[in-house]
Length: 214
Image 1 (cartoon, rainbow, N blue to C red):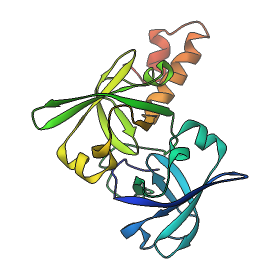
Image 2: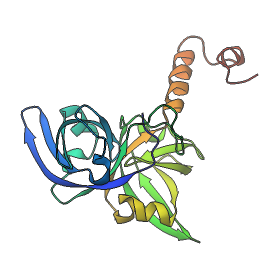
Image 3: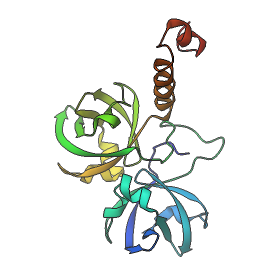
Image 4: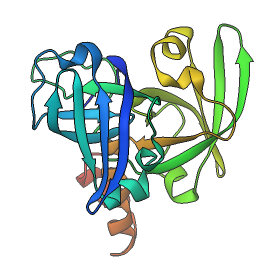
């Protein structure tokens, strides 16, 4: 479990295909302190396990399912990635609950300036957009953000200068692909409602029993 608050930006040192997927080596920088093989690290939104650690460089093994759903298969030496260690019990939760299980990818469609922030719109598939609500939470390349709009073809988020400076989001250009994880709490609600609709429909009694209304 993660919070979506990026701790540092790492650099890809090597990436190659293997019989099991893709082997990616990333320089963890200051995050190497206390790190060890077996640790979970959020790599631009994807929960990955440290398979090997040599100096400050960690090796990750991305399996085919991860490569299919995320941008990890596109990584090459020199690329930068957002990094966050897993949440420890008792830590502050400054973002939102992020599992590191990417739901799909989106592409940067538009960037608008508004005061001291930027409003960025991303295009995505309807199945992914259907899990989002305005003012809800979303993780974009592992960064916890608040949704401004969630439409039928795009979703938008507001980015402050600090986020642009301290994550890889500041280097994105129109057409770039990002990893997206919808709010895990919302997924459970959608799952319940879908089940309720298929078993007699959604009623006030069912919503009350589930604690959604009083």
